[in-house]
Image 1 (cartoon, rainbow, N blue to C red):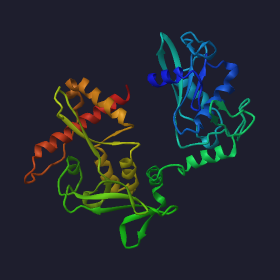
Image 2: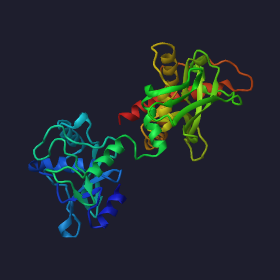
Image 3: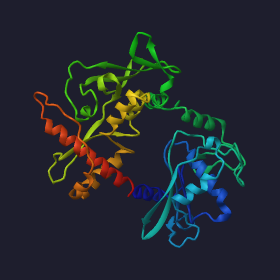
Image 4: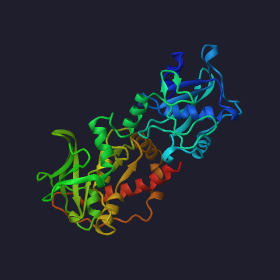
Length: 376
């Protein structure tokens, strides 16, 4: 972030996704703050946007430290500010404040996250910000408060919401979130579905007769015998994405298989602890959620036991931060080992049962540590 903001400052001009302010918005300029955030949230570059506070444009873009700015706000104050504004559909821009030290001065950056929820607009007027006006930013200029953006810019923002400017892979990820809109391609085929509004998108799985191995999480199911498969996503005849899948607990539950990572507790590169995980924003996790149909009974129970063996991260960055945190606290891991139950793992010819037991126990310890990590 610091490098990016310094680069933008060095350009000595504003742009389509960044704006400079000498100081924080006063209480008399709340409508300006709201207007600027909406314009940035609706930027046409399809990326995060930045309101950089503490830069004096009239004085060669020098830093004007915000340390003593009495109007200064933090993330929670901004979130509260947006919460009571009447946004259409109740969908508000995602914002946070990040403080950066530049040239011996302190500046604040309001980061407006890029999302597919455009266009953001009010359903009820707030001071000078009009209801139903759609604002955006062209080059370094915001749409005036009393006007609405040009029609082709408005069309672009709506197309963005419905993924019509997205790649086929981005679109299918969005469609997978609407699992009820997928239909079996034939009454006699239970392995292939298509998206009913755009049937050129299909998902199918076929069983892998050559894979017969075991993973530790299988033994947390009533039936530990695995059935492995390949899951494929297609756009027309083009393969967009492929991942592994598994039919668990005697066919009661079907899911995409998790990824594997590990942690080195020494200077060596080998893993001392391995774990299975999903990243929430990943296509694998979208597929995992797509196939889960809660039935309140068998599938729900199998799903719960499966997730008891997984770590689910918000992002790749969170996963890496968690791995570093584990290294720092692993000396005290016995305190996270309480009340860990290990399922029965039968002897299987050619496999080391003690390895599965260790993997299962370690992931339960990691899950306990993860709960602690999340509240830090």
